[in-house]
Amino acid sequence: MVSFSLHRSPRARRAIVQNLDMNTLEQQFPPAQHDHADCVASAIQTAEKLCHERGLRFTAIRRRVLELVWDSHKPIGAYAILESLGEESKSAAPPTVYRALDFLIEAGLVHRLDSLNAYIGCPDPASRHAGQFLICTNCRTVAELGDSDVEKFVAGKARELGFTAVRQMLEIEGLCKLCRTQLQNA
Ligand SMILES: [Zn+2]
Ligand SMILES: [Zn+2]
Ligand SMILES: [Zn+2]
Image (cartoon, rainbow, N blue to C red; front, side, top):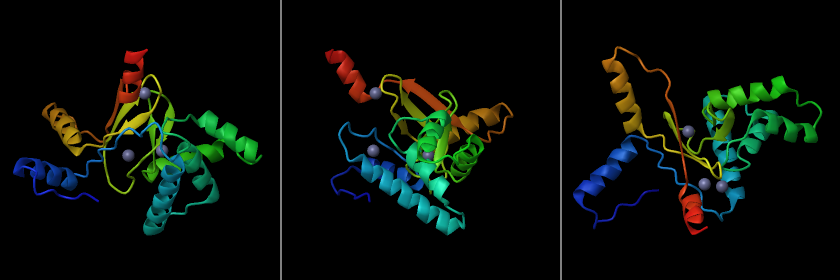
């Protein structure tokens, strides 16, 4: 829920409206201390709702894999998912896990980060967006931008070269605020 302050300049207000129209995620890096169980619960709830609306089956294995992907705000590899599942049940064969991951990616619930060969939960799967990911190389926490301005800019530049952009994945490496502060004070 975004509230508008009357004290904002018209320009600032316009910027907010524009952002709303363009479905910008503006996801923040999660605070160091927060109730992550809430993040997981909300991700599962969103997934249930989205699958229901689209007539997709949110099976037990798909739910469990999504829970494991949301285990933290750091990307997780397929092998780590397999290991956790293997401890829980013997039926977790690699194809099962990969099929579940494919489903979650297709539904927009999970993104695959190619540079890390790992998976991250999407905070806003209901909106169509290009993936722009800020990856902290120190703590591996990932935040998603999903900014349609960036997407349009890149698509426009590509079009100038006669190239039709179909899928955009921007993986940007750097340091999150928390790590930068910690490293500065070390
Ligand atoms: Zn969290
Ligand atoms: Zn996303
Ligand atoms: Zn960090």
